[in-house]
Image 1 (cartoon, rainbow over the protein chains, first blue to last red):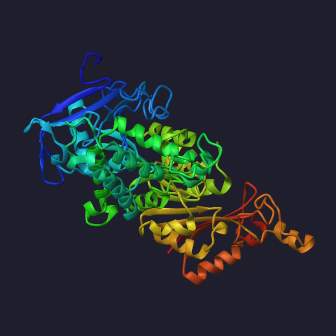
Image 2: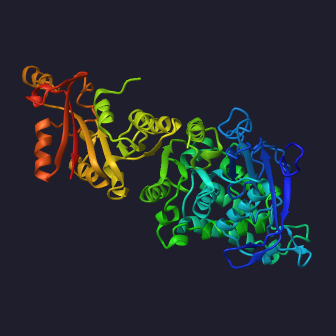
Length: 371
Length: 195
């Protein structure tokens, strides 16, 4: 299997499709950039698909090609970790609409030879999931365990609802079954910041060498606040000043928290495409799993034989614990096997990406348990 | 590993292959025993996050939640048995919890420490102090037990609500004791109920 070009790091495949999108468009071909770790068991029983969050990518446990930083979830994925290439066959794919090699606004529309830009069709979380299913078909993976945090959790839920016979277990961390008005509102701030940047040019900026970095940075700054907790920000920065003794009575980044946010915004623009940010936030805002099933979330899981584990964090105000509880209630109503725990962390929504021994313990136990 | 005596009584009387909801399941000791020995499809509800994590780590389906607030989300007759062991006296509304048990499960097991046991009575009568005993080991200000109940109190509630007793077991220490004068001699009661 080691010679098989389908498996390994920095893989890319062009699937003929067509992929019928929720918006009605047929997308063809479908490019998917992905990585695999470990070896698929002969009976196919050890496959795990990891779904990444809004600005994540396929580099879950290998160095990022642009930033050079370690994979985004090396605390969870790697030798001796709950998701271990020695035991599992691990797949992580860049989502549809993103900008790390999968089809999205920054890739070339074969019909025109130009980047899609805003002519790329609007996609949904379920479209991302269907594209991943096409990838798993290509890799020869049948049934699979889904693991995801934040938007990755939405994909895991959507997987279980869309391909119930294929999903043996689903781990849904710090996530939600629908975007609330507040979630949509924060995303709209980000989108408007991008669109207000004169460099955005209606999305046609790819040939200009001058992308809407300022707008994208502001979008990232606003979103980044929602990933942290008030207590976490206070602990990390308080009202401390940035490399100065006194307030400047000007509009430099006087406060450490301002400097931090500006850095977060700016460094984000080195690795992310503004149009992808528009498309993926739109997909998240459109996500309402109950709406897809006649308005009743339990219907999404009717007859499900998938085993679910949900985890929330007590300081996460982006997707707070009641959102996870609503999913648990729906799963109970559907008679599905579900575990749920709210873990304590000072780090807000981002807690699932940080050092969280209790999270690892829960995920490890859940994945090891026999079906 | 042997089960706590009240749990052993429950485990011995659950039908093999049934569906069970264990409310206040702790780290899943009873659930694991039911799953492994009786092929029971067991689900749990537990308040304590550490216990939930332990239960999930042993492969059980346990939801972190509160009997007082989270039972309403479970559909009618979705389990053969709803089990509430050593938890009734810690709930804010024990009667409401009891009604939920009998709505969710076709049968319900309820176990609780008997506050009319002679040691408790002696402590109050002769010592004038709230009892600290083997089954009530925590001082009054720290005890999670906020609704102390006796076996006779419980029977009275069952009668008032028209609930049928299908079985009753009484324990003193690790030993079974007779139903006669149970309200005085039993430290501990286990009831099997149905609507």
